[in-house]
Image (cartoon, rainbow, N blue to C red):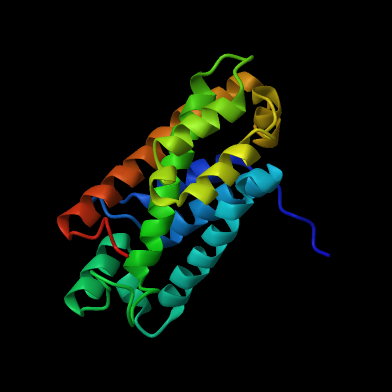
Length: 213
């Protein structure tokens, strides 16, 4: 059995730094690499995040298949993907139909989860050493992803969060050295994740794609 690759916060930072071009476009290859790093982070925390990480892996694979397909160039950036799929009516806007796995719908699910992780990582960054990570994670979840989950999933998620390790253990998982170094790196990474989220949010809003079924 292959060894599980360790999570490194620096890799996530570099991926999201590379994602944004000078013209404000989001390069999908780097966006997905950032997500692969976040999946490693979630997997390193055990069952608490498995219901999200497994779904994220599926979504990443769908988008990578589009990138490597015959129309792969249309999926180079998130902006070009949205334009291509909207212009060619490849997105189910009202109900789940022939295009239930469109790139736009698939990425929207990652986009929603990204907000949760952004909020959680920022709370971890500014929290005191004795803060309960379960509380921080639950607050971040309730302010973001919980809005899209049925009650039974929300209840199971909050129960799983109670198993999360303390803040110091979290920082060890990030493989960045001292707590001060982790806090500093989070201080660079979270704004980049936030900017990526905001650009995507605005793009989807412009095309009325935020409520795809």
